[in-house]
Image (cartoon, rainbow, N blue to C red; front, side, top):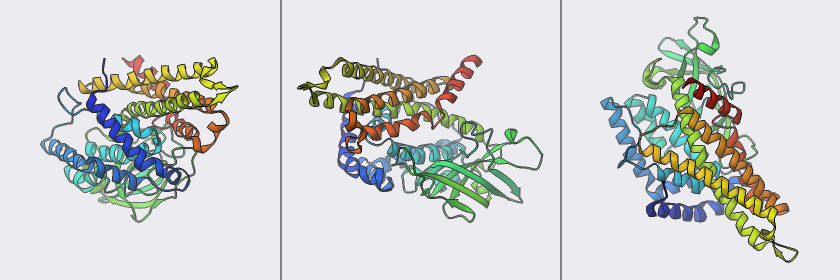
Length: 405
């Protein structure tokens, strides 16, 4: 059975210290004063040498791209995915929104460019995203195509000589208001009259300030306030083929497949985010149940409180074991199926929400007050059941994948 090693525990302790010293003191600014998290992210990269590690990682990926090698999964003796997941867990104990913003910029945006782009495009955009010198967004979702992101997409790309003209609207775009670089999906309108659902999906890279590109102000949201979210509008945005990832309309792994691959990665990552929320809620509730008294005894002596704590611990064990199994299989180069990734996401996200809701109940009136933190964890956890695919879409994905096999 996989377990955290002493090295892993040391990494967790180091991240926890950073969280306590650099994030918790600024929670009010992130949560209530509209301060974006990017300065703290960059400080984290400086403290842990992550910028240098990103540069090395980029060099390896670029070398593979130039040599024509496709990236493979982890293998025994290779890089360990545990460090990244440990950081995700620890950061999500205090600010899931921080992780969402970071993951979209360095993972989804840079990762899509690395997968689909040419070596020149990787050098032009990806390195700056991986090192956080620039902030990235990944724009696929539209107002009328949330769960039907690819089929219902209306943002269009029309050929005009050697250029494309982009028109449309994207919404709920993480980092959208501030992103320097936007990886954007659009449907090719080549005048053939093909049904909208069947049109080819192309992937472009846009830069902040381009004529016709409007990045709207941050939306007011229920939770994950540390992750700025907004709309992106395109009005006759002209782009050359150099901004079309792969510089071809039929890149290896195509726009549709690239989006689906990213969904698998996102969904597995949500389990680690959920684990952070669950662990923090359980920690806070154990401490509260020991010290909060009612009728001259700790509320932890009451069986209904004990039942909630027991259910929290069961959820923690189950989600942790999912994360451990994912790490172990990744080390063996096994990529989760869509059904597996969706099942992880569905169960973990629901568990995080149930645990956070029970945490508020244990805290009672105090749980409803921002100073006690559990209300933020519930607000932040709730979107885990929506983004990267709603609960309902996870059920569909699991069933379809199982029935295909």
